[in-house]
View (cartoon, helix red, strand yellow):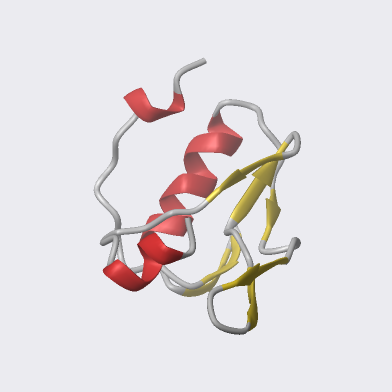
Amino acid sequence: MNLLATTTKPRSNKGNNKHGKFRSGLEVEFAKIVTGHGYKYKYEKSKFEYLISEIRTYTPDFEINNIFFETKGRLTSFDRRRC
């Protein structure tokens, strides 16, 4: 099932809503899409350490069947360093 083929315009549904607590409207829309396709997800449950000049942690937005997803509206140069 191709989830990328389904596109929706993000809305400003930040904070608590019927799909849980999210940091952006894009995350709300992603949760709606995956639940609409019958998938169960975990939201910001995993943390990964990474090293640039010091050890930091990264928490991806969603996990579905041990596959991690990050929803981003804009990919900055700082974000690219963590990939």
